[in-house]
Image (cartoon, rainbow, N blue to C red; front, side, top):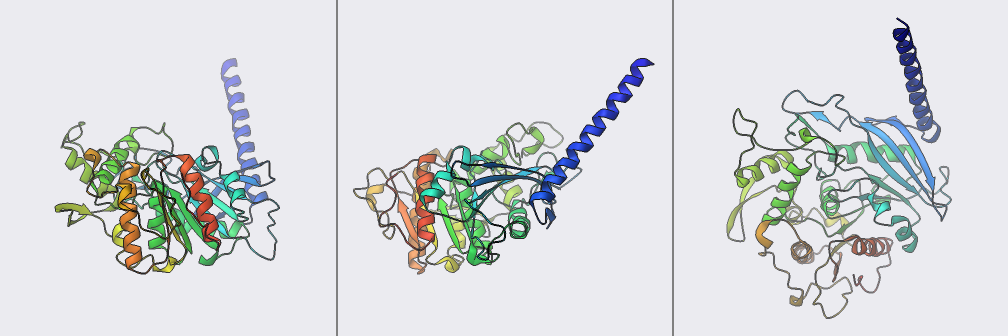
Length: 412
């Protein structure tokens, strides 16, 4: 019986410590944030670190009613609501009571990354300093391969994320409620790299009331392209709705043989199934002479032809690389020359997107914007699909969006 009393005592101590930790987390939220629980968001913890230039990185761990939701059956994970973190950069001397509020940049991460990647790999604090950016930067979790979308379907575990609703309907007003921001589109900018570049273009087109400037670095642009569909399909079985790489298999998306635990072996069937779970039923269209699936409401290459980027005329910047044959550094207002070798019929075996494929679609996107009279900055570079390029693109975009476009594009 002695061991039972000891165990009961241990359980009481553990419960007390857990309660104290919960109280400490709640206190951290209420001590640093005016409205920690609002707009479907509940704050669970806040930590802050000061940088060498006296700016601060404030990490807010929270839950959202949008991440996750039941879909198609009984979810196999419990609890369903998953903690996620937002990293907020506060400039040196940030004053929550300043009479002139701060503009805000929403900076989206790429595939396989997380809320901290722009600081751990992108050296974002130094880049903001180089660009003389004195605003707030919000770096949200977007899922390892969430594709900045309200999923139409489900994971293998019968749940789904609603990333677009979380970011635009919950996080944006939550940030405005808790920080000294310009709380309208004139004070909000949006940018991202790779998958985050796709997200920036998608959010800009679907939420013109929220943002006034957009920067897309090596973005995914055309969902009709075979390499794009292969990349997205692969990401669905590799990580799906995962927030961390160690999230288990029920976060993935696969179509199974009826009554079987084995996935359907046909890659074409799997690809359509996985993309339908993201974007919903496709429409069929003829693309480069072939009939392919398309999702016009989620495809920047379609959204641009619908005039959805007109609200950003003069405040839209597009960057892509793999133009190592270019004989000069562009000034941001020229189409890519033939020497770049960009070709939208190139598929690289349709095994996935490369910087050259992304560059080809960026060049096509640039021509469409020009034809429609949407003022923008377009930089084709020699760079690859890497952080050294995205760091320089960020500095260029912030300078351009601030009203003084650099005379020349980044070299790499």
